[in-house]
Length: 212
Image (cartoon, rainbow, N blue to C red; front, side, top):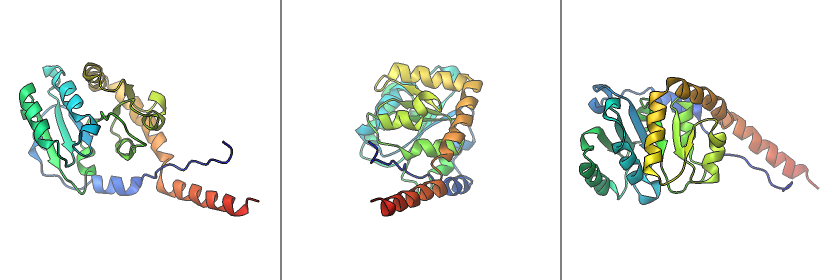
């Protein structure tokens, strides 16, 4: 164990925040009331977006929530069909491929990761950098590590649409809870800032050079 060093994926927070300020002409986001729930990723079964959609359909109507998913993929038609079955097609926006997903993410009230498995997902750090509270399923040690076992975001059991719905409702209904996660998330994401990660790589290389 003493011969293992870990350097995490960096997050270029300055770039993300700059691009997040780009103009966005999308009436679905700009001209409606109610909170925006967002997911970012390829539309594939691995991402558990069908679970997210079923959980979204369980949210109370009083919330007037909308769901935006940014990313392309082969499951687009299936997700649109499922939304029709669930009666939420009017509150769902599938953006597709987007070179600047951060201008969408910055306008979200909640970021949700519903994957069946992940490694160490950068999208969590990007949401934290943009002050967007995170709800994530505890689908891998990397997700739990990123959110410090629930200190920086709400961690839920994976593949459980009822629990995911309760978690999203709780976050959207509790401002103090959201603000606490946002503040701790900003501290957490600073650990993955590009300059600091570069220094850790440099130090690692120097340690290897200097080792016997």
